[in-house]
Image (cartoon, rainbow, N blue to C red):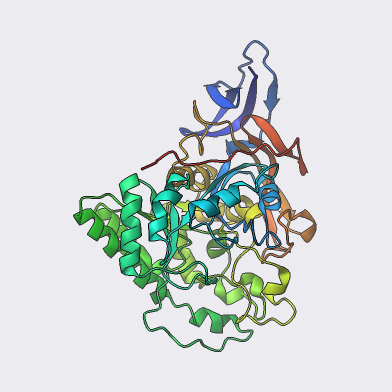
Amino acid sequence: MTELIFKSQRVITENGEQAASIVVRDGIIAAIEAYDYTGDNLPTIDYQARVLMPGIVDSHVHINEPGRTDWEGFDTATHAAAAGGITTVVDMPLNCIPVTTTAQALQEKLNVLDDKLWIDAGFWGGATADNLAELPALLDGGVLGVKSFTIHSGIDEFQFVNEQQLTDAMRELAKRGLPHLVHAELDHAHSEPMEIASSYQSFLKTRPTAWENDAIAMVIRVMKTLVNEGLKPHAHIVHLSSAEALPMIRAARSDGLNLTVETCPHYLVLEAESIPDGQATFKCCPPIREKSNQDLLWQALLDGTIDCVVSDHSPCTPQLKNLDSGDLEKAWGGISGLQFGLPLLWTHAQHKGMTLTQLSNLMSARSAQLTGLTHKGSISIGKQADFCVFDPEAFFTITPEIIHHRHKVSPYVGKTLQGVVTATVLAGKTIYQAGEFVGNARGQVLLSDRQS
């Protein structure tokens, strides 16, 4: 049996911030004691004034392996995550090859993980227009839930769903008590593509807020249909960017629907007015919107309408970003920033009246709750001893040299941020410290046990 103590004058527990000693036994939190507790002189790591907070749970990461490992991959993605205080990621079902829409595709993904996971990883499956018959076996395989698009996903092999297909798929998820994630954009008019060239404002006009609002309204209709069938669906809106949708989300919850919502750092710290033309590192779908919209998203985080903040790390090769030509129209959309979510948000959150405890809840506890990973997300007895050690007063500048994801391309390069992750602990063992990785890849595969 391995037993040791992690202590700090600032520990973020499920009961708030306090000075404490965390007793860890075989990778599990066994007790929470006073700061001066020694436990018969157990081995002790004292972080002193640095914050000891729960390891971050990032439930929205495109790792792209197998098939597009030149875009990212589990080794590089989990290194970057560990350097950012993230101890759990959940991999999205695209843009890997094959997409994770069948039990066989899930198995192919599991087969490539040996010695690549520096942190724990779970997996979302996909619910598409053409895989409804495959869903039961895919869910039996252990995915934590599924994701659907209501608009073209960017790759033809991951087909978007219409309202009836969404209903049929969500029905299957509801029967098992699993969440159905939805990329909510809906182009009712099947608009002809606008000419964008290198103009960010032109790109922004091609993805209006109405697309998100209409898609979220459709998700709510589908949920009500299933409730009328006696089911209890859980739908989750991924990467919300339209603040106009917040009133209908609040109303749906008032009606008793289990509708949860996430947003991402790029919608909270970047604004359309400041994005230069010809810089596709800022391109994503739905798009980064105006400052006035951003302010409302922050309010929704503070009042609890938005449940969690996740990265939506969606990398590609530099060539696909058209860095030389500046052609936004043809560039791949997706933000790379997996490693820097906590300092990005803390730099801004403290000026919005948000405490580090509140931010931790949004990045750890609530995303763990979404994924059903009940042993994750908080510093409490019985949970896995996953910790992020954070110096909230220190500053650093993002440079390509410190980026650990595969391609050193990000809209955040050059930004100076407040807050430095100084160590990351996975199941009671330090895996990252003072800018260096410790030991070897010891992350675990996380599969759902909610079977049919």
